[in-house]
Image 1 (cartoon, helix red, strand yellow):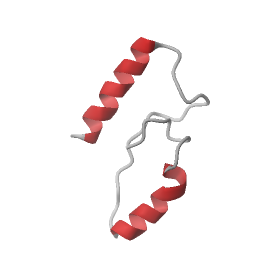
Image 2 (cartoon, helix red, strand yellow):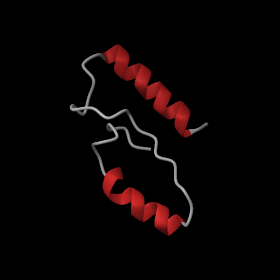
Image 3 (cartoon, rainbow, N blue to C red):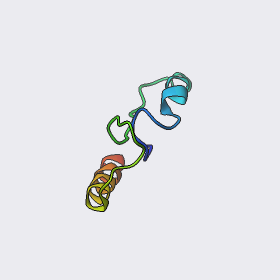
Image 4 (cartoon, rainbow, N blue to C red):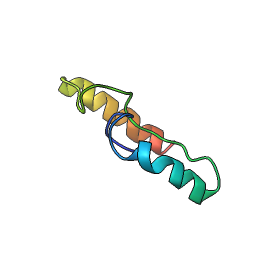
Length: 58
């Protein structure tokens, strides 16, 4: 899981290495791709944050 949008953060670099080392598919959970690292609304951020955490523990 990464809190940053999918096209930010380390996943694009480390994802293929993690999957190879795990020797199985690894699910990636993050915010949707975006040009900015944060949304402009506290309400939207809170909703996205809740969804990310729920997805990670589902």
